[in-house]
Image 1 (cartoon, rainbow, N blue to C red):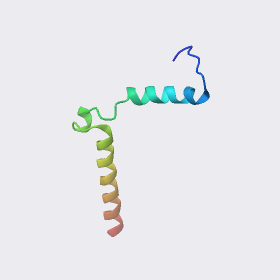
Image 2: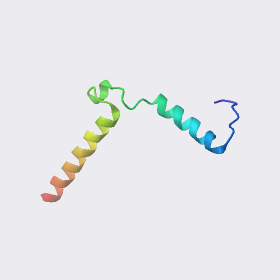
Image 3: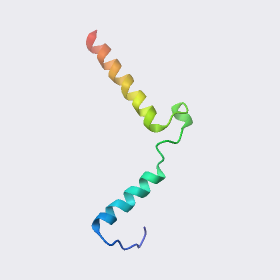
Image 4: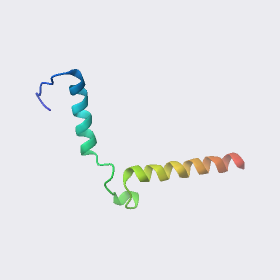
Length: 59
């Protein structure tokens, strides 16, 4: 993308976003997340936080 001339503003916005999405693979498994993909790991963490918040309110 360095020194690349884009035909439109839309292309100039889309190209970096596409490159970032391709680079950061959200499906790749990570050992630090217990072998789970980042999206699944984040969902599990969010569910655990929601459950903890609900338990705290009930107490």
